Length: 184
Image (cartoon, rainbow, N blue to C red; front, side):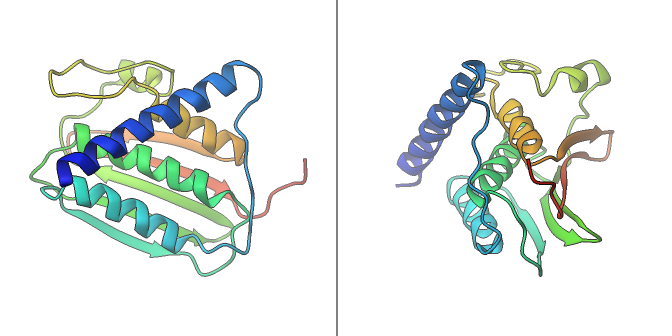
């Protein structure tokens, strides 16, 4: 059953990413349905549970600390987390845990995903958020190279930022957005 679930999940993510990319290219931009009353914890827990169900060999450690309401599109932030976590599962070291941390403190929401493994060199880091960019093609690698681009677009649509740091110890993708947003 997990093979089928994994295939369905990957196919669904590919379709969602292609549709989001197409909408962005056609001028529609990233659409958001903000709802400050919807709790984020269950969304993030579901995303992690889905990834774990199809990747049981990966140890994913979570820390969620979101006590206050966040004016955001929880579904889109779930998609952002899913894309970052999928990237960590694909490129991270299988024998090291993936750390997912979500906090809303000091006026800022932060979502970070960190994994061990080979560092991403500076030249590749500059291109990671471009559409269709794939650092290296591996025989078992799936995807179109849109996940990080879509995550970056979700970050921008929320008035936030998505950055990557990488060295010999850890690769960390971190999304930050202010909790107080200006009205458009």
